[in-house]
Image (cartoon, rainbow, N blue to C red; front, side, top):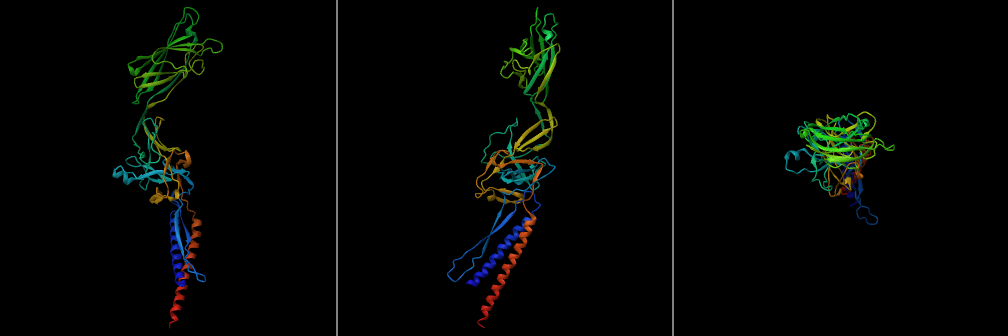
Length: 433
């Protein structure tokens, strides 16, 4: 019994060291594979019941684990959609085959790094056929509230290379200096025109024609102007009119003293704004709060538009796709506009090493890993996303080669045990002779 247990222990030693050799071989083979997580084999002794004076060898058992929680160093690339996670999180991907099948079933897999480029249908796909997934944004670039413990809200990231974008004007700032000399008695009352371009919901250009008309008194100074605003998209119709009165005191001279609404939406004194109902929708116009030197002024003898600014742009063509640190997939257009298309979340599980390893450095959630939760990149425990970057393999070749030597020696020693036991059994057999 003792001799046979020695034989079994030697056989288990050979099998365990062969398993360890397999993990070392796999690690060395993937030393240059981006995102590869090294596997590690640990040995556990097996103990059998022993009586006094007798010992029965139990042998050894090999246990293999992939160290998914280890992260490799990042290396820079030249592709804006090469991404890597800086932290413990992982981003979701799905298979190209599931998209082609078009059954609505998109199995979620996880990765820590990937090189994605748009394919012929615009999907951001890796060379291994994995497609990046994210939460789609609304038309205004806002991300709706999606479930964080389910993949139901995720969609394959798809970008149309021939995409166009128009950004309508919704806000503008109108700050000008009006000549104080025009509101004096005897002035000729010349109106000051100002044309401001804006963009409608279809990216078409239109103009707001603003006219400042001074009130000329019979004597003294009125410090009053009538601001009339007409919309070219409404056939030149007047859409708002306001009376601006300026302060002539020593402390606040030249600043707005009051704004009276004649027609149109009321002036908001707390914000210094009013809303213009143009043909394409409302535009919030800011002229400054009462008493502010940063708003409309009446000084000296010249008309000067000080700050005429607005958002919005004409229709632009797509020039590039970028994924930022917070996981937002942004499309940049040749007009300088940037639009959010998707947000890539980062997934976290309680036990990263409990994930099931798949091909192409992808992983799947299992009962051993625990349930997953999706975080915004840059928030929570998951870290953020680095673009123009890939994660290197976690394999240290020098360490693996050292373990290879140790495994070879251990395998040879176990083979020697089996050889010795065989010789002892042979001697026992020879006793009969």
